[in-house]
Length: 345
Image (cartoon, rainbow, N blue to C red; front, top):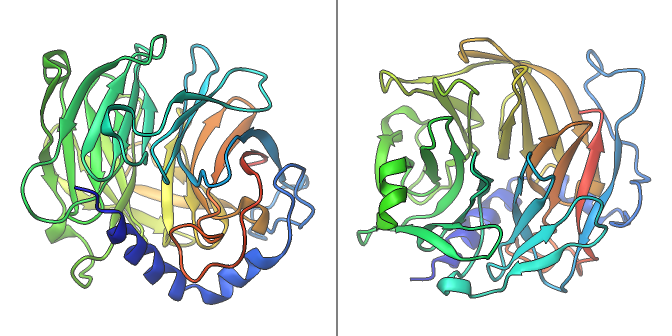
């Protein structure tokens, strides 16, 4: 069942609470050139070189409204998913324009939220209205799919994959984290079942509020980190004991944080959608503390929904959700849809 209105409502709520910030997006910034608006940084940590926001590649289509992104470190290929209709785009190394890899409606997919490439190169794609599917990147063949059961409202959002091949996925409405094991993947299909219930650990919110969103794992597979975008909290899930705790944040919070990316050096990066902000945090070795080290705010980010850090740059999804997309009220007409390249994060 299609549940897009739930996200419309949630994003509308976020938009109403950030009216001043969204006004910044009315500043005209070309999506196909280096941002002319100066990016702001945290004064205490700003380096001598200003961050540079430019365009990595464009995405064909008038109403793409991209949301998810995944980079394959083995091939350099980047995949982007459309929130509007579920199209999956592919940008090969050096390409200035992405191409359609999986057309809209493939395997009944209504939308594409979170994307990840696993260690074997398989592409995982979440559909908030159903669950998650796994594809062969060479042929586009669907290898497996897992769907949420039950009649309660749900919204499957983002995912991460641990070194042992297990996938973990957030549900922004139910506030649970689902799990797909390698054995389940080999079986090819089945129900998407919760592994961790965070409802008792989150800051209380009205029913139906978007909470869990981005999720990531450390490179050793010891724990998960998932963000409560409404409360601005970061939660740690110990994969050995199942213990759930709140990460101690220093310097700011993670309100409006959408996608997360954790590098091997302990740098945690976050995209804050309605505030057109990117942040970088220094995570403690055990993942229990995080200190803000960098903030970039730039209207040229055009409502960033997630990011993928690659050598030398960070790729950021410019969703333009406020330009006739799922955010209301609309602030205008979308420009060409693009993926930003940010250096200095």
